[in-house]
Image 1 (cartoon, rainbow, N blue to C red):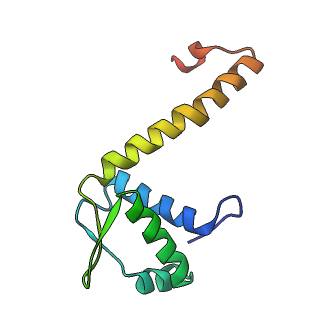
Image 2: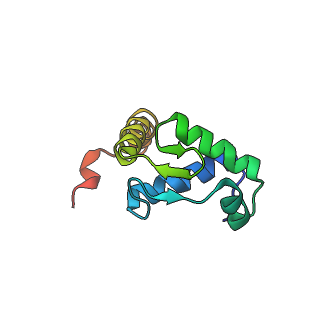
Length: 112
């Protein structure tokens, strides 16, 4: 896994999990690798992976079956879509609109 410096590693790993769920690579109730197993696979400290799992658990994206492992939550895809859509509308769309205005363009450039 290649990491870039703009965002903390644990958030980049969480993004990979979310993308896998949105793409269908990971489905509801699929088991995900253990903290140690995943850390070894991607070459990061297990504590970093644990931080990812704690974040995703807190967000309801994954859940833990004590003694068995972590699994994708049944409604994970819907939660990720809701979060990412809201973030897109709050952050990306205003920036795109500002850029269009600065360049003297309007939304008709998207119609082809």
